Image (cartoon, rainbow over all chains, first blue to last red; front, side, top):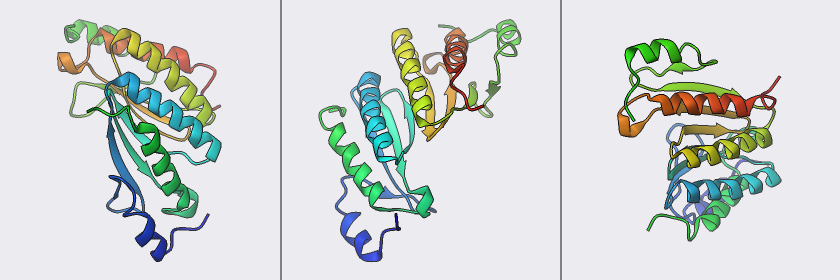
Length: 100
Length: 100
């Protein structure tokens, strides 16, 4: 898995919904705020299964209904297509569960 | 739920296995390192159910097989018996799943 090229970055990253670059490392982050802890953990469980299947795991911090996610590909030393795909999947799974 | 008294602190906190005080706030923390992501998330799932049942949730950060936990009772402004009980339950559930 190779790091994103400059053209891939320019194309893929701005198209992500609400994700931003992390300062000081080649990674993206997003804060998800759910209805409650049950919704947050249901989402995390579904993401966990997908992450395990893909062999690509997030860094995430949870407190109650909030999950702060950072994605990067450690083996590649930065962002790859795997991160973009996991970000998109996280957004897909979160729809309908987020706090109004 | 009242904050722990001085005598409760002296009795309960040193008896916890591997938990330490967080600098700058009235909270305890512990790092759990599991065999792999599957073991880590299985543990988180069981803890999540217990936390939801107790109405008392952890702050936790996960990356792959590692989970960094911080416990404090926000409503009480610091450590209470709920934190001690959740810490003990986390330790109980982790037994057999931790990295050798």
